[in-house]
Length: 471
Image (cartoon, rainbow, N blue to C red):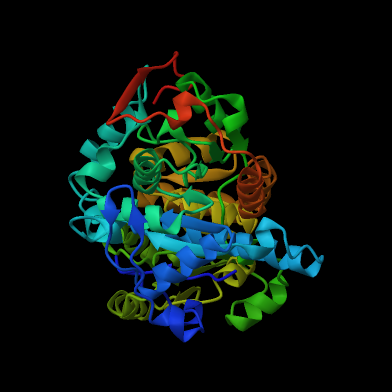
């Protein structure tokens, strides 16, 4: 299998995934369709089409670059698909679908009529607009009136993805974002191809715009999420509880003493890790402000070592370092961008983080007790409710609440251990592996001929039953 991410509509992959054969690299193949010939294929697209012609399954893992979580989940799944192929070949099953599969990671936004910046769009809903986003997320198609799917997405924005699917003829599409899922459904309706579609929500609640009736399999985090799909008339055999996929690095075992030594952290203190660095700084404005207000009081917690990760934001890193020096805080460490984040989580006793779906999942997999900081909206509110309801995390909305929570943990370290025990209810470190297994299982089955699943609709609303969970 070959794994790459295409960054433009022309599907230019990373160098390692380019075919070696010069005839493939120079390919300009006109592929006929029922509507006549279409534009020539570029090299990468031609390679995928040739693999499909040869009977090798092509699996597309499609995300949307709206924040980093959907992309991270897509790569975790792709890595698991790759590992399944390696295992099949090692066992001598060279003819198995997994052994012959070609895996491609795509950003659906690159295929739009208008290619917009998903990260910038996500940042639009982090300031004064957050309550409006919250209302939309909580009350749009979450009651009895529900969204099924349709070709509207392709007709309006994504006809180029339909043509890509027509040419490549994937064996399966795995979607980690609702836009990717709906565009995959549109492409299947318009091309008539029989490939299965797997939807993988990356939060602890399923948004109302997932294509409920046209999805072959929903891979969800836990039973509570499954309970939100059943009233939406998603059949039981199309729901699989897998957990949210995270990189295997967060499930590996690390030696705590070694991890602390590598980051020059004390062994005799409670290490509190604050994840304040991110690709998008704007959603972290309030988070960072809370940490700023906490800093002057850190001298009251001498048995704690606060570690602030500033990420790639060098200006923020310099500012925090100056503040730490000004306050004379020996129990605060400031780090920039960290590659070995899983190892750093192992070094920590508690993690302060935003309640993003992938972030909290990584903490769960790494067995790191969490303090969820800030006022949550939309899917993050659902994540907070799920985690605190299970006793797997604590929540602090204001800097004073954060200080009180840290003081409590400082005086009662067993409270962090209790969160860790409760988190075992939600912890599913092999989620990506389960999704990969389900993908190849669907590929091996006969195509589904369910008219409800395969029927073509421009847009499809339907009436469900009483919601299991109200928002």
